[in-house]
Length: 399
Image 1 (cartoon, rainbow, N blue to C red):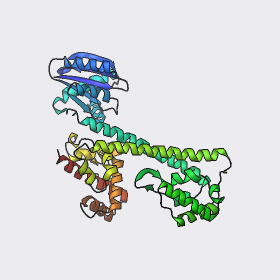
Image 2 (cartoon, one colour):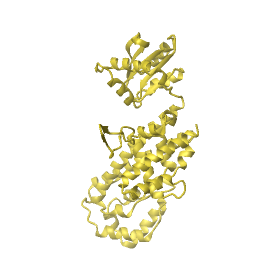
Image 3 (cartoon, rainbow, N blue to C red):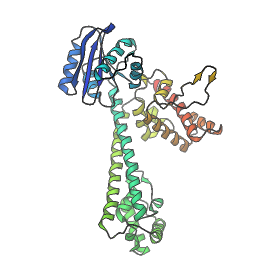
């Protein structure tokens, strides 16, 4: 029984190798994350006599270079949730914290929990890739929100009110955005009002047909009326105005394009996994949310029950009791994946919009909670709890 504890950092790691009862095989030593150094460590571990298990914390993407080499060498690797390790460390009498101390604690955790360690499966690499893409997708979603706010701020001064008239993406091309395309072409109300109404209608219809949008005459006349009555506060005769508008449009289009590319890659990877069709078919999920949901949940086999999955999402309500007092108004812990909660909440919003008539247990439960007087957000969180229980049951049936 030999435990290799690894405290992982960004570009280096601290390694400690222990046997039971604190017997030290190798005092803590540092390695850098290069192929040569990590491969040398793997060979050193393989040379150890006896059953060996490598234990390391999940540290975003920092542990992946080690994990990749170790799995390739067919080593037993157990990746531990940082919260679990933090709780284990809190039981120590001496509270010091250094990389060396952490590596010793991780190795000791491996000894103390030897028979409960779960081996990291090779197919988890697919889930890791999916999760990484999902995190990048969320990053670009934030960028999209910031980019739209920046564009809106400029349009309020060049084309006030235009956002209310133009919206929506082309269903056959999600990277196309009508507002961005329109603003990128006309960019200021002065470029509309310098034309007569009939000339603008003709110009708008040509633009719409060229870009694949509905060439509505009534829409063109509404835009012209708004341009005629609007009061831009940024002049069109300065070079900076056109530059700011066009750059804001360009950035937003690039972000939309990146989001589409990432989502397409996530869909391709998710389709390899056997639960994809089952997850995608669940009400409120569909093509966009299925890979994002799967990315955050990962392999359901790592959860011993549906309750464990709910706790991972931070949707559990820990008991609060003291003496004869029993708390009844409990809040969700939020000690879990915030992205899983956000993605799940999006599913609940879609579910409320779709109003399914078949396989509608979650939707009906949401309506029941609303009927009981629960706020809509609370009702959605309660329904998400039920949704994750159903998700767990259906995906586990496929295992």
